[in-house]
Image (cartoon, rainbow, N blue to C red):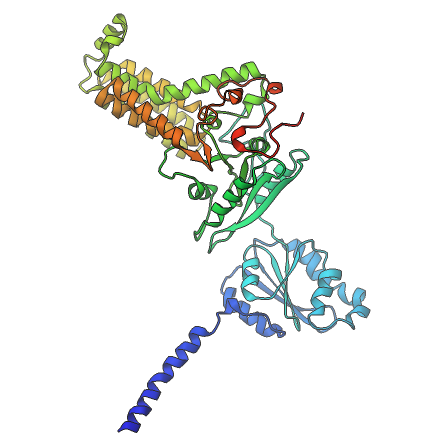
Length: 523
């Protein structure tokens, strides 16, 4: 009986050993190449052979009888480059031009010979594992496998379809460059390189995304930027742990200091000239492949209300336009709240004739000021969002006509007063004056908070809301820099480029908050 039990136990253990062996066996993507081309191709086919757009092309190198194969993805790789500079060089020109040298080349040395003397390709890399090959091929490169070699050659044949260079839609200017970033990372970095001969411009590449890998570039001017800032940016980028990073907005949300704040702590832009200007101040820019929006860090609140056109115009009109922008931001944020506060709590603060006119207009309105204002503000926001999503020929007309119809119909129906239609129209127009769309969204959200505070405590509620918002902005930081700088901490010398844009010859120093290596602007 004891012997039978032992035999049974041995039989039970055998399947477990097999499972352990299967678990310890490396996956195909972790295999190293062998000197057998057939086996190598079989391992690659196990990984990506099921994809219809992955092509395997086997051939003989010239008349040597040495077998080889290329692997590429249709649509990502440049077929003309493959046919003219790879296939022709290996199949047609090889035997006639390299017949004598070939007799001395064997095994893995053939790879080096083909790499250094045969292929007229600028980007050639040797790799030794299936995993690396799969990653490179699926991003547009072409893999060359030669029988008898323990390595594969990765050839740079990526050809992605990109749109033409256009003026940025979200940051249009009257005077300034008409060039905007595209979805191609190489094009975007070339815009930075081509914007004059910039000394010490560093472009450091990273990869983000665990399953869908994308290239990300950190740009800075090494002679100017604070090294601690660069280290902090790279540290936060390395902590990004997502399957896929499709747009720079993902990066922005993952590297910002306070994700609970409604204010953006990273500036996004489509304009290369804005990025260059930020780099010259000692800031860092982040560019991601697949999106035309670059990121700039650190950022301050005043930067969100500035436009590159402020510096292209003379300082007097530039200052006037900037002051108008600050006024528009205040109107967009507080106008509906002040209307509610004055109408509901402080009618005595309104001039007598205007108060009588407003009371007469609101005599037929059955709702309190808050409900009245919320109805109109929500209607405008819905129309604005609908105008963005509609086709371009219809969108602007829909927004204008829809606003007029709803406002006129609401007044005639006695739902809102005519004075509120003026207030809402002024608020909507003021919100469009902001050069940064993300800040405009923040002001639109906070506008509703201010309206609720005004409906509860009147003018005191508006003041309390302003104090809470200001205290939050003072505490907020972007990569260690105060969000309200140079107002807090107070630096009067740097107010030359805050609300007022002084002449360029007076702005000789870079911002002190950036702790730059070279604080003086050349010239």
